[in-house]
Image (tube, rainbow, N blue to C red; front, side):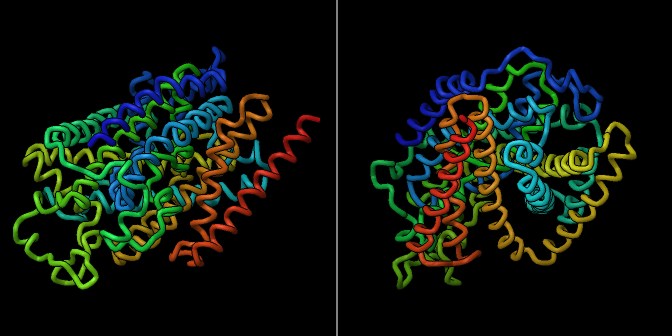
Length: 499
C-alpha cells in the first residue's frame, strides 16, 4: 500500500509543479478564443470552466483507466511507475500541449493539426485512421455498458437501443444542451466510485507487492501471462498514463473555453485525475490477484472451484487461470458488490457505466466534427449535421451488430484499437514537438516522451501475437532502428529550420 500512497502524492506534486513547467513553455495569453470568435451555438459555445473539466475528464476516461489498469497490474508493481511517470511527463503533457494547439487553431482536430505540422499525406492518413477509431470506440462502448446495466435491470437489447439513441442526441444536439448538462452528473458518479473504493482500500490496508519488491514481469510466473512486460504494459495501460485517444477529444472542449489560461487545469488536470483513477484500480488488481483478494470477495462456491494446476498456477475446474476466469469487468463487479453493498455497488457500477457511455457518445460526435473539418462544411443547421452523422451511425450500427453476433471477436479487434491509440499518441507528441521547435520553445518537453512512445508502438507492432508475432530481440532491434530514424529525421529538419 505504500507504493500506492507515494504514487498518489507524486501525481499531486506532478500537477502542482510540472504542469506549470508545461504551461510556461507553451505560454498561454489573453488572445480571443474560438468559442468567442467563432460562436455558433452548436459546437463553439462558451461553457463554465468546471463543466469543461468534468466533460473533458469523462471524454478521455471511458473504461480505459479502470479495465486497462486492472490488466496492466497483471505485469506487477512496474505498473505504478508507468502510471505516475507516464501521466506526469507523457500523458498530461500530451493532453495539455495538443489541447492548447487545438485552441490556437480554432478548435481543429488531430488530423488537421497533423496536416499543418507534419504534412498533407499525414493529414489524410490521420483522417481515415481517427474516423475508424472513433466509430470502433463508439460501437464498443454501446454493448459493454449494456451488459452491465442489464445485470441491474432490463435486458441487453433494450439498453443497446437506449444507449444508441443517447449517442444520436449527443452527436446532433448543441454541446451545451446534452453534453454540458448531463456529463457533470456522470462525472460525479464516476468520482464517487473512485473515492468510495479508495476509502475502503485504505481502511483494509492489504499487504501488497511494492515497487521495490521487483519490477519484473510478475504475471509471467504467478498468473501465466505470456506477453513481455515491454512493450505490452505500455499499451495495456493507455488511459491513465499516455493515450492518443485524448487528442481526438480535447478539440471538442477547446471550442468551449473562454480563456487560454483555463488550459492547465482542464487538459493537464483532467489527465492527472484520470491517472488517480488508474492508480486506484491498479491497486485493486494487485490486491485481487497478488494478495489473494479474490478469495475474500468471491462466494465460497467459486473459490472452491480453484486448485493448483500442474504448472503451479491456480486454475478453475474448467482449466482457466485466474486472469482468464476473472476478466476486468468481473473484477469491477465483484469488488463493488462485495465492498460497497447493494446501494453502493449500484452507484459505483453506474460510475463505471457512465464513463464508457459518455466517451462513446463523444466519439460519434468527434467523427462528425472530423468529417465537417475535412470537407469544410458548416454545422450550424440540423440538416448539415444529420447528413454527416448518418454514415457514421450506419457504420456504427453495422459494427455493433457484428459485435453482438461475435462477442469474442471484438476482443481481438480491440487489441488493434489499443495499439492504434498509442500510435496516435506517438503522432500527437511529434506534432507537438514540431510546433515547439518552430516556435523556438523547449521541444524536449514532448520529444522525449514522443521517442519513447515511438519505440513502444514499433516494438508492439513487431512482437504482438495479434500483429506480426516476431521474436522479442529482433522486434526490439527493429523498433530501436525506427525510433532512431525518426530522431535523425527530426534533427535534420531542425537544422534546416535553423538555417
